[in-house]
Each structure stands twice: as C-alpha cells, then as structure tokens.
Image (tube, rainbow, N blue to C red; front, top):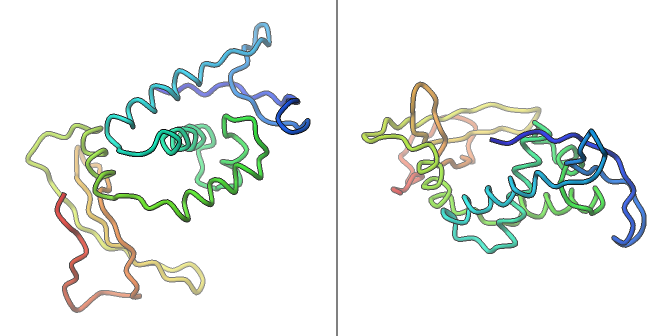
Length: 178
C-alpha cells in the first residue's frame, strides 16, 4: 500500500531561514520534485477520518507520524523526526512528537473499534487477555492487554499499565466493553 520514496538532502529557503532537510519523492530520472506521498497521506487521512472523530490538524499529524513510522521502521522519536514529510527543523518535529505522545488523550475504545473495522475479523471473535511483566533496569512494566485473535495473530485492542510488579490478588475493573 505504501511505497518508500527515495530520500534527498536539499536546502530549503523561505521557511524561516535556510536549512537542510530530508525531502521525500524526488524522481530519480530528472530530479524534479513530485509528491507521491501526498496521495498516500490523503488516502490515509480519509481512512482515519471515517473512523476517528479527531480534529483535522490532529489527523494530519497522525498521518505524518504513521508515514514516518513506515519509512523509518523504528519507534525511536529522534529517528522519526528526521523522516517527517514536512519542511521544518528536525528538532521541531521531535518536540511535536513528544507533545503528541505525552499530552494527547487517546480514546482507546475509539481506536479499538477502528482496529477491528480495519482488519475485518468475522464474528464470533476469539479474545485474548494477557498480562506481561518485565523490567528494564529499575523500571518495572506490568501490562494487561485485551486482543482479538485472527489467523494466529493477536491484535491489541485495549491495554493498561498496572502499577504493581507482579500478579494481582484481586479483581480490577480494568477492561470495559466496547
């Protein structure tokens, strides 16, 4: 669905000063700019818009974020900031990513419905409730996740971080119905 476009380093003027940025979509034959990613971004935005009730600017950012994930093949924010398809400084992209992930309140139910509609799993569904616990240095991660299973693959729908290191001895109302 998404094609990786070649990367070229160019200098842009008129964006608050001259700086080098990565630009996607230069035609290798004649080095004239075209914008093949714009069509992909528009298609992705239209798909998201039909499932998520987010503001247009938020949808645009999420599209850029997802395209950067597809291109960079990493979740490292510093690396993602270098492949954003917009003409701003890398440090600005990095700060924007931090703000989005740190401050935006995701409606997990809305995202779960979106995931289910995208993968078009026929009912009845097989659900998997899993808890994983691991640590990185002094930081402990304890995640409870609900996933729908299709053809041997579990697609996460809802999850929560538990504030304990190990198993819980009491029942928590952590997962709510869709």
